[in-house]
Image (cartoon, rainbow, N blue to C red; front, top):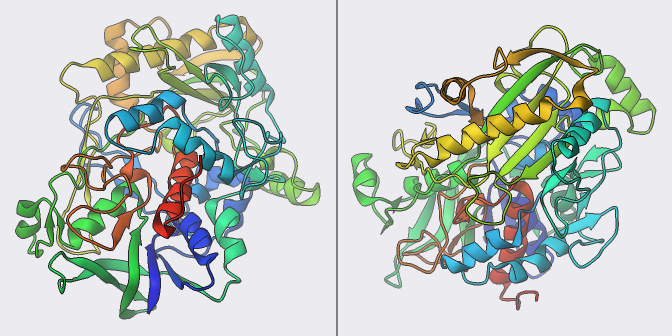
Length: 534
């Protein structure tokens, strides 16, 4: 019997495995549905361009038809490998702004305000620029400046300043606003996933066991004390089925899709839904799977008149250059090298409400659709959408993928659609600046300049897509409707917590990997009964 069973070795699960197994007196079992993170594309940063087609490390989810996006079915890639999505993401290190976390606390997530979470961001971080009041210098998660920057990425930053925005060399510093280069989760030019940062150094410990290819079908409960208590998990691995008991707690780290699905398969969720699928109700919790939020993204693409882009860079030359020159050159690029945070005219407060990612290549359909020639792409997403979707069960079988209803642009007031129009406009304005004069070719998406707002709306409905930041489906809060309390304990049962991006009450203003690591860092202290850092 293990003291703790962790389900999912992603951004959060690897953190918990490391921190909990530091106590030699406890035993920890980490179960991951995917394989080891052995593939070279995972570790060479530029390999991200190839990971989109590597199905063995991806859950390959798809949404239901999205009614406000021309009924398109959208692809939602999520990591299914040690390190989870931190092994396949673009490595941008972004934490959001203090008001994001203060907002969580205001909504009932006591203890998750900025002053409470900053110490955990700092504990996790090892920034190559050194430690200061906002950054850590000796944590497991290495954060680095890019070793290689494409000339087009520098043009993008210059174009931003020409458009009247500030330059910013640290999106996690005193101010988030402005244009600059992203810092990335890399160490010496290598992707530094949660598996590299947290799991690899812990695997030598005798009290930690890691099982890959382990598909958990349900959490089991005992009822001896009245309130159901999680006492183990049922999973399959290597063609065999197991029931593994847990002495202390089961810790669910499956992410915004898998965590609510497994709760419902285990009997925790909307009672009517569970009964419809023949699942015995353990705890009636209507909000399991609800509150789904994601950053919707619109890409603006133009041709380049110069061959500076990554579109036709040969795979073998990049790989040879990377491995023979001490991990340098284009192989170290995260592709989305530059970015920005700007405040639109619709912003309700002082926070930037649009994020940009610049890619010195043509990126269509997540990079799965290769376009001829050379070009560059600006991603733009609205940071605080008001639309809410839901994860529901497609069936009562663990082998069936859940139904994802993202409900993009579904807010009744139409605010999210107006924000997406602003996203498209700021992208167009930046690309029109003089910094791009020497390379500016014909427009690709949209196919011509000078679109009206109505035409931009049609463009958005036809082309907008996820930028991979789903959260919120196991919301934490102090109210009785919240799925987990501020200690991340699942309401209605004992011995079970959810620790991942699904507990976020609302999206933060940026990429979600760093906040997920922070959540797991703080959760590890809550689980162990350690006084939180201050």
